[in-house]
Image (cartoon, rainbow, N blue to C red; front, side):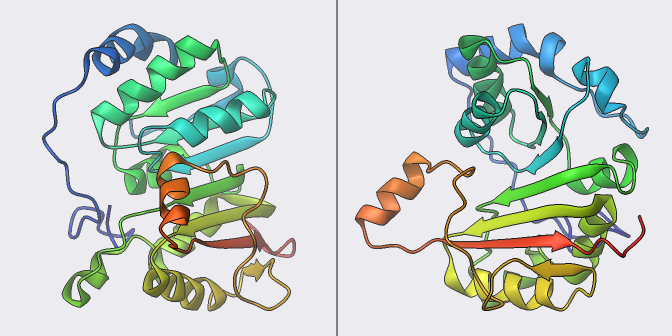
Length: 234
């Protein structure tokens, strides 16, 4: 992904790691893609047609191996969850989980999220966008590759409906501080924290195994929750 929605291929904030898919991941991809996979095309998606009904529209960017996305979809079966992930093993693992748990409210796109947002998501059409534990690009010279930048934030906001929610989480405090600065500077977003900073983990975001391990080691996690102002227009 890029730090500029206007030129999505100039800088990428992900690295495509060449890893082999496990048997279960490959089977999940092979068996599940035709049912729950969405081929990227530069045209707007019709969520109600895609999911076969109406419901709250939720976009998750970078779902990793998809465990928390599966848990959220299971807990809220009437919501429509569209997950975007560039790593095929993660997509395969998600689709395996969808089949294993008998879920019907998840769809997956294996593509760059910037292009998906620009070309496939109608302005003002999402009730929720969630981005959990994006690559923090720890080294200072790589900070410009971080996903959460002012221009990308504008793109996110434009796809939220009025009063729609943007939820981010990171376990890297310098990135949390960067996110806070960028999001607080956006005039269309209202910070849901009464102190204007971070919020306790909302109950709808499940704890991941990675996060639980980090807690045992004393690592922190920072959740940022924002709402699009109701007086803005898509």
